Amino acid sequence: MKLQVTQENLAKALNTVARVANSKNTLPILSNVMLKTIGTRLSIVATNLEIAITNFVGSKVSEEGSITVPARLMQDFVSSLPPGVIDLKLEENKLHIETDEYKSTINGVAADDFPVMPSISKKNAWSLPAKALKKALTQIIVAAGNDEARPALTGVYLHTNEGSLYLVATDSYRLAEKLLTKATDNVNLLVPASAMQDLLRILSDYDEDVEVVYDEHQVQFRVGDVELVTRLIEGSYPDYKKLIPKDFTTSITVSRAELLNITKVSSLFARESAGSVTISADPKNKHVHMKSVASQLGDNTASAPAKVVGEGEITLNSRYLIDALNAASSDEVMFCFNGKLEPSVLKEVGADDYIHVIMPLKS
Image (spheres, helix red, strand yellow):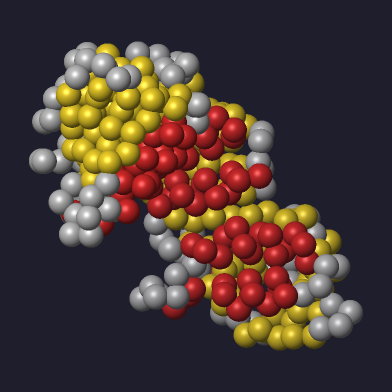
């Protein structure tokens, strides 16, 4: 293998893929990235057996070949080099890296033993606007669970219902649903939330369409020169629609920024009570009140002007409410509930494509 590539492109590609490489895995080669020439491009690949990310970089290839090298060392070294052209040359599993000012050798491992994710049939494919997918993931991924004993809840559920494509995540204490787009195909994919976090990172500065290809076991997201492949989570997703109330006895329409601020302030006094805060509706004075509950440090009551319909109060985990408010993008939000024991719902005012459900705490 012998080629030339720019430092800027190689560093960016290594930063994109290297986070997937895992030095703690029982297979040492999984802490490496694979460099492989494909035509006039260099592919950089990392995998942890559940997720694989490939980034293709334009290069001037003189001799084809492949090698795996330690991901962390390669990433840090290339990022430290000055901008310009880098010469890469492989000799007996040693990768020689040269620039005008630097000359280094990294000991590699033959690429023959590097695990490759199975190929995906292309019979199921569609495209999504990157901007819409990025916003949807930002809004729902915070609600995904991390309890490996309940694997379905550690995923993001991508599915169609009545001709629309939805993204959903829940950890059983909260649930976020985002309507993404209209859809004609029947989609039912349960994607690991960790893979969606990586996808969100890849989407950060990309604004064109994302190609999605999937089969029964895997899904691939193609973002320009980057491909992310992940195994799907087996099993069925909960019938979450039953958890979302349709009618409410109390609704509070309030500035998102003001509700976020009083929640943050109240949470400071609720650290010893698992973040528990009580929200009460005050239709007479047209305010929403929030009181910190059971704090050993003292107590706090904060209020914000609001349009209020109905009375009542509900106790929530303030961290969940802060996450939901940070995920919303509208200037005003509507917070709705039915007494102390039923789920509460946060909606964006002016948009009906996003809801965030938060289960109550016993007060």
